[in-house]
View 1 (cartoon, rainbow, N blue to C red):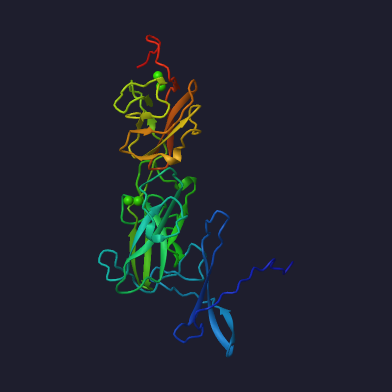
View 2: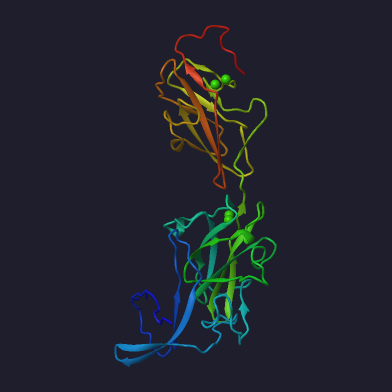
Length: 348
Ligand SMILES: [Ca+2]
Ligand SMILES: [Ca+2]
Ligand SMILES: [Ca+2]
Ligand SMILES: [Ca+2]
């Protein structure tokens, strides 16, 4: 039998204070792994007793004695999802909290640099990933020492609806981080149309906590639909007040575009408009430069200098709040700086 433990991974951790301070009996070390896309594993905790042997040297002895460190039985000796028997009762101050309070915001990803500029999302395109960040809103009473996260639906003030309170672990520790990304497997997916909250349990001391939760996200996995109502289409317009799509344009510099009642979605977010020489393209005007809120349904392009005889297409992308989009193009138009021959232009 080999006694080789394999490759030891080591790290040097600079300390901000003494670990042999008599007021801190034990040193807790948490280790977790983060994969290439930034998703962390569960945390493994160990408790050590620090014993100085010289003024600046000493040994850490792994504590194998089991004792609960919180009223919920958190302990360093239990297997990762288990607890020790608690020996104190808890004080849940969620509903009347004299201590520091936080707000929990739902986010699409954790790419935000500045916690103060984070905007909460209420819709998501995925049923298997949720993410949240949290920030202190009021500093008072006790400070928060550490956090745990969970996720649940709208039916309870406890995290139920995703995890099974009997079979599954409900709370996951995240230390002093202020963000988490939650990946759910096939058996724990969020249901479409149901609102889910990210729950954060903030611990003030070993027996006192409060539970905060985000205002929720609702998975919606269908992009905006296209209306089947007659006349609801992307219209190339020669004038701002025109109502009928045109298939020729006399002025090569100005085009009006309308997408009124073309797209349907309960949670429309915004539109992007482009102009191109083939349907769906953006070789004349780009989508990203022409973004409009959900309340807008027409726009104009000027200084176009379009070529006579070429066919152009107006294109509109409709985005919903889950970030999904649908593209629709007009049937196009030809620039013709001559007067049109009467009787040759049919259109509705
Ligand atoms: Ca919200
Ligand atoms: Ca939200
Ligand atoms: Ca037409
Ligand atoms: Ca047209």
